[in-house]
Length: 149
Image 1: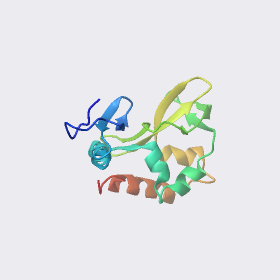
Image 2 (image 1 turned 90 degrees about the vertical axis):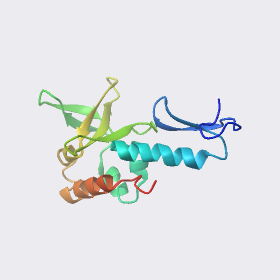
Image 3 (image 1 turned 180 degrees about the vertical axis):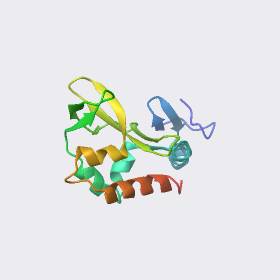
């Protein structure tokens, strides 16, 4: 287990882009590994869910999402028991080719997951999530959480 940046450094950790994909680093090169993984995510139009939850402009949005909600399935029916994953540092939000941001959701009782457009959260929690919140989420994600990386 060697550092990806130097030949002398024994890897003490890794920065992940997604499960089983990332950069091994020594103690000296951890900042570079974080920077390079974040740059990759930014260029790929992806954001770690854990990083989105921590962004100061998105905290209100995530707080407004109910712990359990209904999701419109592909067949058009509303299905109960879905949630935004609470764990999983490598769970990703993704931007589609059309520019829409997809959020991961899961149904723990059935062990299934899918991605839904950010705009679907207005239907999920109309009393708590507004169009202004959705616009803020899109703007923050479009501008890039990792853009300074």
